[in-house]
Length: 241
Image (cartoon, rainbow, N blue to C red):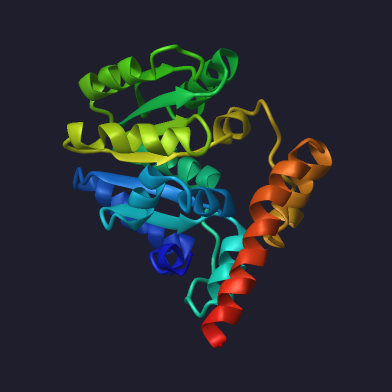
């Protein structure tokens, strides 16, 4: 797992957002993976995901306190979370400032439509290049549409690892654009689902709030975060010995 953690962005969220702002201004193509324990655990047994996480053209940012803790345990200097929802929120604001375009792909039809309407109301200078819900049968056909739209930002909310694999499959077809897999961010940013209160965000325990609100998440949390930390401890002990 150390090979993945070594590639994690190690500066602040403010620094990374400034970098993304420059990418937008310069029409630089960038694929961002918001890396969490689940994606790292999957990569160990998924050849395509492994290739993505080790691809130097892909940016990995630390989405989750467990990733930060793992980095610290293995001597990797990463100290600040950069979540998908925060990146998406920043990019929309920055698109408004730069008067550029976005394509939204994912979530339920009513969620993505609500999100589009919210962007139009709150960020009138953002150009909506197009959108599609995540329940379409042919996701590759949606990417054909995205290629033709040539958005400055494309947010894909299909869940790990589907969103990352789909972006990676098509990324070479684009000359510009920032592409980010953002999981359930559309639900939060559209207002359809509340994000954790600031106390939970500040203390890096959003996961606890989510489990309290949706107990069905507990098994998934155990299989990713808890098992992840056990594996990191084992790797640390092996490294020491």
